[in-house]
Image: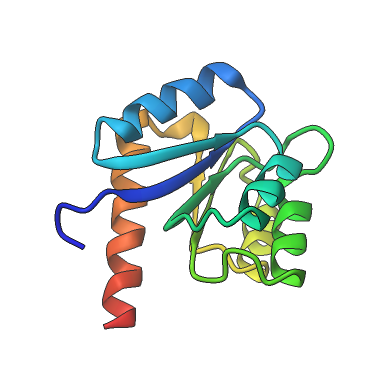
Amino acid sequence: MEGEKRKILIVDDDSFLLDMYALKFSQNNFEVYTASNGLQVLEKLKAGLKPDVILMDIIMPEMDGFEMLAKMNAEKLATDSVKIILSNKSQQSDVEQGTSLGVSGYIVKASSTPTEVIEQVVKILEKKKEIKN
């Protein structure tokens, strides 16, 4: 895995943030895929995309992040992917709902710089790898 690019699927309906995070992650040895809503994510996963990480917003049109996670779980999509929420919704109930749907981390957009988001994603991935080994 060392030196190998990790695949990340970033999901956000804000195109400015999506492009900015895509750029930042690609500069940090990630192979980046993007989607602007939950329906696109489900299509990409059904088409065979197997990301190491899915970094998702909660508030999106058509299907929010929680609905998307529930559908992914029901259809057994991306079962090996580490799922991380990146949202401004930071209520304890949101964090708990994310946890109950199998997310490994919850990052609050407003209180994290892009660099900190990448550091947190890498940290969560490292922790997951340790648990597997």
